[in-house]
Image 1 (cartoon, rainbow, N blue to C red):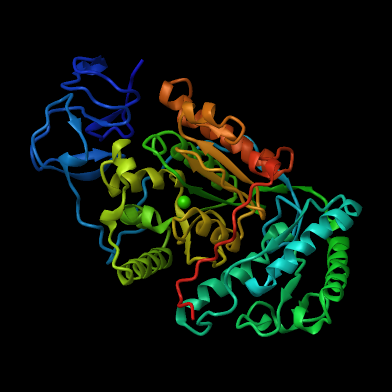
Image 2 (image 1 turned 120 degrees about the vertical axis):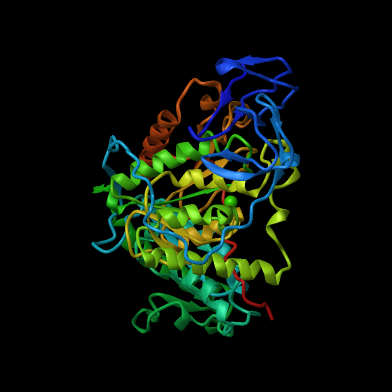
Length: 503
Ligand code: CA
């Protein structure tokens, strides 16, 4: 049976859980004035031209014509509000929100010492300085898997950190700092246990001194292919080097650790209109539980939070975080302007058909995955956080760019929320896929790890799904469970964000 879902007590619209025809009667005396499709907005009271339409407790836009109680509000009814200014945004204003203590405050991870997050996996990572060497490294990985890995049972996998950067790039351009620090930090991801293995060519622009400290540059950590006489010789040396690293990694064991040792990321992709009312707020609830328990949780995707930036600013704990937020979002505004793009390109026709009237509404759904916790820190793409808690990592929204950016910032697990479905995965960290509706789970039962669709049908609450997700995150982080993407070895290419010129 169709229902109306109202998100915030101040909202003057609610969302239909299924298609409903004219004359359908709901509690509170709402009668539909016309046929209205699933996930679209219904006016909860009589509204006049110029009135604010409020969902998620925020103004989505202003009415272009009168709409009676029970009427349909869609993209044709709304005038977009001005994009929020980045000047003088309020901070430290967030309303206190009561979150219960998490049911569990420990997990089983691979400790990396007092100043580091722990690994959720024990992986040998082989980092490339340039794409030219990736063919050799791919062959090396397959040889390590067949010849060496069986001898080191505590090492779970070997991963090639292949990327498209390294040469043919303007290495001294101001924005080159982003891809360089991203690669430098990806190789130090906590899932790699501090073991550094770099394979270079010998004539590339991304020289090893840009990735490693002087004391790290030695024959144990770095191998340049042009120094070796032929394929067999370089492969022999690479296998020898890998074996030394495997011996070290094999000594690692999982131990019981506090949640303060856990750093995870959240992102969404292929969103639908239910993402913002089911999967994203559930992820937000799980995020709040983790943060309350001491963990670090990152959320990202600049273009999908742009219209709610003032709400994020209010949640920033101090001026430093607010200023960094304004800087990073402003940088992205300029980056988009250089490409002659504006925000009207978003949402897509499919989003609108699914009930998302404009980018403000889409942004509110996206932000829901950050829960209600205060934002302790804002970081640029590929930067490392210095604080524990909820962190906004200003990365592109593109799934395959957000992933490596968050890996560089130290996530050891990612929660990926989808409405339409994607087989996305990362080799470097487990990815838990959460879907927004029941028919997606039925369609892709063996790809989706957790279904939030019960919230649409009223079988589950946001809190209940949020607790299930929290528990699943700890099961996966502790190695007791492997995600579908891990089981099948699904992994996407590391598309490191490079806003600087290619030469
Ligand atoms: Ca995304």
